[in-house]
Structures are given as structure tokens and as C-alpha cells.
Length: 106
Length: 106
DNA sequence: TAATAATATAACAATTATCTAATATTTTAG
DNA sequence: CTAAAATATTAGATAATTGTTATATTATTA
Figure (cartoon, chains in turn yellow, cyan, orange, green):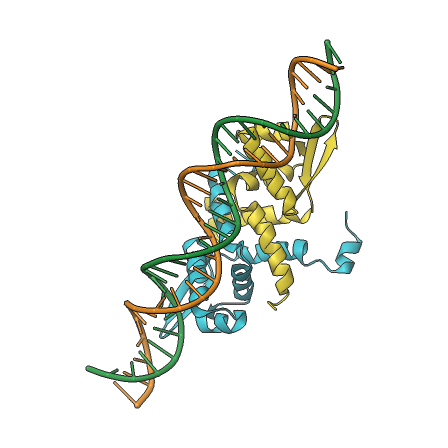
């Protein structure tokens, strides 16, 4: 329907966006662009309550953004698709502008 | 806080993501990557009710994704930042994979 | 096997988002 | 100035999202 973005894929992409459209979940996504991390590590990085983190991880997993893998007592999360790194980078170009990067705008 | 993505910007980015995390709003965003369009044009492209489209446009405007400009009786919408084009492209790499593009995955 | 550490799930109140139907506003044409 | 076209706003019922507290599951260690 939309050029280069069929309706069916729009729905899928909107679900993925819904998954990361939250400050904590986006922070999780960012941290995982650096490589897989287990829940304890993410807990230390994010400073939220354990159940809260776990629920947000569950949502990211259910909406297809993250995969989890158990390694003995720890569960490691990782990006389900490397393309999410590009999405995070694109978000940075829009939302992390420095004064300089703003100087030469079109 | 998060590497390369301070907490304050995370909140801003999450708001932007919230804005586009809806199939219709994402479709609008896609259409506008091709250039500004007025409401009537978007109405024809999206096949939704006029008030519904208008409300979604209002949300995109309020959350800083779109700008609007009146030209006589028509109101034109455009992307508030060209970086959104990159976000849409990144989304396509994740959610519009062809069988071939899937062949050589890492 | 019992205790502990790591992680997940359930239940729930408060907030926010969604669509539709009705109405309002703004601009140009006559 | 009035009618019509383009777009926005309001109201409201329904559904989805969020964080917390409490509890459950799973895996190792003693």
C-alpha cells in the first residue's frame, strides 16, 4: 500500500515500534546494541525494580525485539535482529543532536 | 546514562517513537518521506475517516514528528526532521525483508 | 533435599490511547 | 455576506499500558 511498505509490514513495524516506544525499553535496546546482557546486568544499568525490568523484557521479547537464552542460572537477552542497531543510530541522529550537528542543517 | 543516549534524550526519543508506533501514523510518515502532502491527499492515500486522520496528524504534530503549514485552503504536512527518513529506512531493513535479503543474514 | 539466587508471572488501580459521531473553524467562491 | 470545501476539535465509550506488591518458578549450592 504505502510505497515500499506494505500494509502487513506496517502493522509488524508498528508493533516493533510500540515495543521500543518507552524510555526504559529504549534504554534496554541501547544497552543491548553493545552485546548480550543478562537480567542482573541490565538491572544494574537501569536502576529500576526487578519485576518492572522483567515485565519490560517480556514485552520486548513478545513483540519480537529481543531473544533470550538461558545460561545456567542467568538469562541473557540479545537483539533479535541486527537492524535494530541501525534504528537506534537513526534515532540518535534525530534526538541526540549536538549544537554543531545542528549548525549545518538543511 | 545509556552510552551515547542520555536519559533526557531517551525520553524525547520515546515520545517520538510513541508518535509513530501506530500503523496509520507510520503510513503517514512513509508517505511524507516522499515530500509534503495536504490532508486531502493523505486522506486519499490512507482510506480512513477524516476526523480520524486529523487526530492522528495532530498527534504527530504535537509529538514533534510533523510540521504543518497552511497554503490558502489546504494545510500541508511535512516531516519535522529529515532524520525520520533514515528511521523509516532502518525500519524497512528490519520489517520489510525479502526472501533474498534474508538469505545472507549474520 | 533445603536454602538461596536469578528471573518470571499475576493481580490490580491509575493512566493513557483508540475510534466514532457530532460540531466547530477557517478559507475561498459566488 | 453566504455557501461550500477543507480541516480541526469535542465528547465519550472501550480497550490498552504502566508500575507496584505479592508470589511463583528455576537452578545452583550446601
